[in-house]
Image 1 (cartoon, helix red, strand yellow):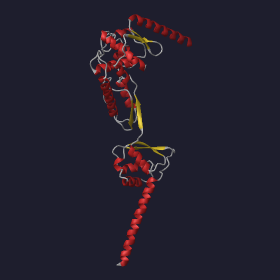
Image 2 (tube, rainbow, N blue to C red):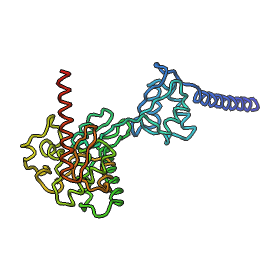
Image 3 (cartoon, one colour):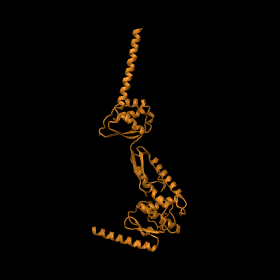
Image 4 (cartoon, rainbow, N blue to C red):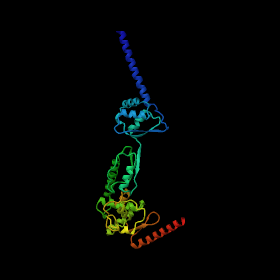
Length: 335
């Protein structure tokens, strides 16, 4: 009996010792440096949405950022962090320990991608850019309403759906318009947010100089107050091509051609925006500069010369025509 007891106790000791040694080994390996990346810098690892711990560990072993999926699983379970691991695309540093990799996946600092949308793009052009971004998934079936997207730089993870990204653009646009509408100037010659967006889209297409936007907005606001036609060239182009550049100057026949968007023909605003305006143009329309200007024309520097009277405007136009003639002559000499 005593012999049996001694054997039993010895077995228990050996099991406990083996368990302790195994635990020590697991935690040692869990904190030990991992494999070196072939490039010597980092390895890109993608963890899909809905991936469980076992599959995460397998992916890490298959991509050779950990030596043992089992060690990673046990270490994560021991730290009670299995539910905290997040999906995403990660840049795992060369030699990172399983413990460090666990922390990277917990923090969720995955690789992000960007899509920059310039102010003044049409909705069709924006959707074309969204469809062309290779890390986005899914499709966008319908083109959103013109002027309903906010041009910005959007940051997203691989696997983000195109539908979700477009929804963000629409939500950001709505939020920006709502915030600016609250602080708008009094007695503006339009009464709805939609009209404000339409006018902002015209301002956006008329000038690329940020400091000019409030003054360009003032010209159109003053014209609306006086019942004058807006006479904006970009509205003619939109009526002809839905915003696709003509690649040439506007013809006299096109200036006179009636379309719902030709503000040389119609009074007031066109029926919809002609592009997607940015925050600066929206803000300029909601709070335009306080001027008497009714006209503007290019001044040769990339900006515009403004005028309150037709006589002043005609003088500015003559200056611009002379600049055009000088440039044409210089171009001919270079040929």
